[in-house]
Image 1 (cartoon, one colour):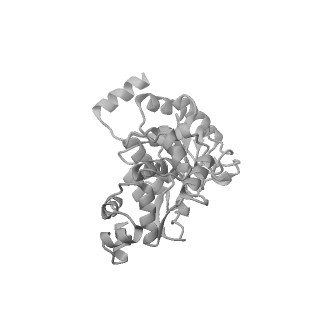
Image 2 (spheres, one colour):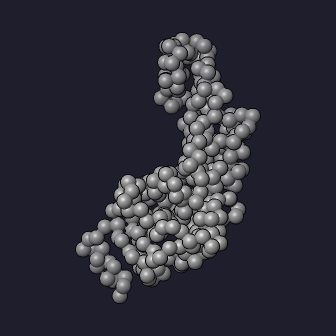
Length: 306
């Protein structure tokens, strides 16, 4: 908001006069505070509007957030827990009564709307390469790999953020995000399985996995990735931060008719001793590269083996 105001060479007092509000409201808006309705009015006076890279079309911001929530198949109760916003506040926002700006921001973050100020009529940029999933048919996770992982974690996953098409994913998970949802902008709660895009954006996904576990939102992230230990993303997000099981041979993805032209690895961020022991049993012919080798870890692995 401050950048937009200064681009017009306006003072806070001048912008307040244009919007018909108190200059203190401009000051608060530029700090991300105050009433969301005033913020939207100030944005309009600067020729700007709120848009979101994951936000669907709609008649109003509230309606668009409502459509996004429905598209994600989230109830107001589920979203309230995820975003720390009351169900009543969610109902008000969806009815285009946005209330406090901070509440709107928390709700949008919970939905992964990716809100940002853009010139009026201009869509927010969408990182299409980041949203394209390697879960498409040719690179869908092999069922035998998934079956073994279910035994490792003791059931299904809470989230698959890289589903090809929601409702048709082969991954047993409570929630699936497809390319339209853009899993990079959503929180990852609980136990997560990701088969990320194998293009240039893969580093964004491995960094997201490491961050979600480090922040405490995800308890465990399992990633199926190509073995590329010569890359920056491998050393930035995997080496020393996650346990890796380098799989023997090359996997056949999708229908089984498409052998990969590369070796694959299962990466576990947040693995516990139980996970490590079960992984070593389920993938006995894989090479385990631990996140860090310490005397305590060595004792732990010996006890697990016994």
